[in-house]
Image 1: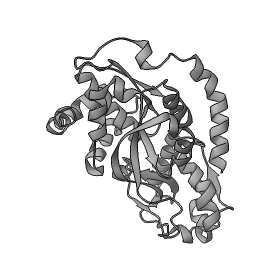
Image 2 (image 1 turned 90 degrees about the vertical axis):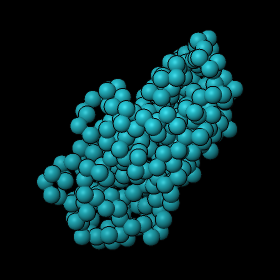
Image 3 (image 1 turned 180 degrees about the vertical axis):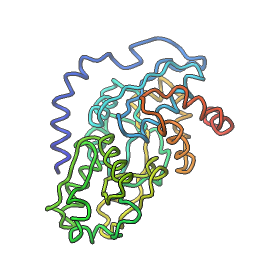
Image 4 (image 1 turned 60 degrees about the vertical axis):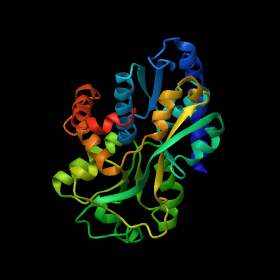
Length: 298
């Protein structure tokens, strides 16, 4: 599969960099959190992937309230899997299984541990402006000109990109459309511009995502199921994390969050915030949802 070749190329280019990184958090510091766990925890997160960033920022704040020293390392998805499997990073909170990141998990999963699943309603989508004159991907080929013959995608190494290239395009005969891949921020900029000007636009997207709250969008039907069904947003850890931080591991293994509440978290972090600093936003959101947040660390 094409994604396997992408994984192999990314692994080759990032292995050296990861090899120069510090050893796992168990070797980096003997600092102890108040409950006896290893005190330093490193989370891998993918820049531009707002669901992963939001869950990581939430847990950074929650764990730091409990006395841990938490670092978020922003890195592409393939190096994130490589890093967790090698022990460079402790946790990755944004693995979509079984479909989106299935190839990465198949390659690296034997050297990782599943901590838990925090949402079971995530899904990949082909999203268009709500007033677009088609409702299904099967109608797209004959109406490609409505969308300037373009599918606006995200990063080349994303699991969603692999699904579009390997499954959606050949299944629905979209080979004549240009599939644009660059980055999630670039896709969102295109979406914002089209919505502001009233133009039809087609983007690869996913739920949960704050864009569904900001823009009037609809998902094209996928009668052949090429984008997969509901996905499980899964927390993965390095081998041995449960032994080194059993209390934190237990909290994370019990973590669940529904899409409605998660939408408020994403809105608080990203709407109107053009920076990558979230301290004030997450503090405000936690204050507004203190009763629920306290249930995360019983």
